[in-house]
Amino acid sequence: MIKNYLITSKPSFIQLKKHLPAFALYRDKETSEYSFHAENFVQMCKSIPNLKAFLHQDYLLADSLNASGVHLTSLQFDEITKAKKLGLEVIVSCHTKEDVDKVEKLGATYVTYSPVFDTPNKGEPKGVEDLKNLVDSTSLKVFALGGIITEAHVNAVETSGAYGFASIRYFE
Image 1 (cartoon, rainbow, N blue to C red):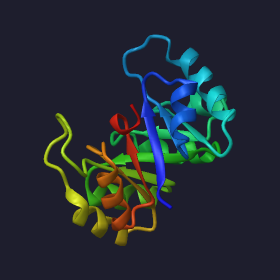
Image 2 (image 1 turned 30 degrees about the vertical axis):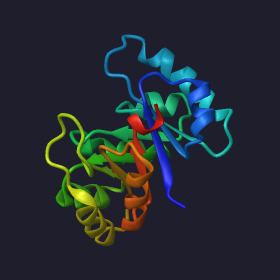
Image 3 (image 1 turned 90 degrees about the vertical axis):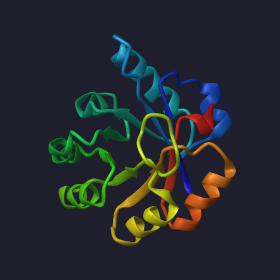
Image 4 (image 1 turned 180 degrees about the vertical axis):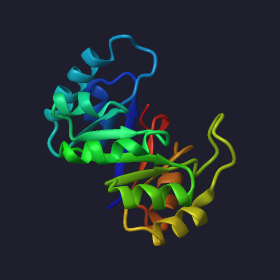
């Protein structure tokens, strides 16, 4: 069964209970109170069995709040080892096979690979065949990301052999 990864800037217990994701990321690039909201998010996630809570970019905060892990950007490859030393699971945003190869060597736990489908302001979609080729070429667990808004998209990702899919709009 394919894993689902909910990405949100406005987490709610209702949203988490409705979708029951396996992974959830709190990512809010605009709030000045990220730490406060992150703490509430991690606590919410802990109340749902088997849900892994991830925080965006800040591995020290993720560690201090006992989150499952951190989701690092494609500009944070140098922080993979630091986060892993703290015992965190690490998801890294990747956009090329070269990026995936680099983060695999650095010890990432998972990657998001994007954009797989058409999504606003994210460039040309890579498509399911490219995703399948990537999945076949790495030992990392790959989450497809980008433009996944329908069951048909989820089914297409599942046929690629990807570990899972990550989305914002699918879970709205």
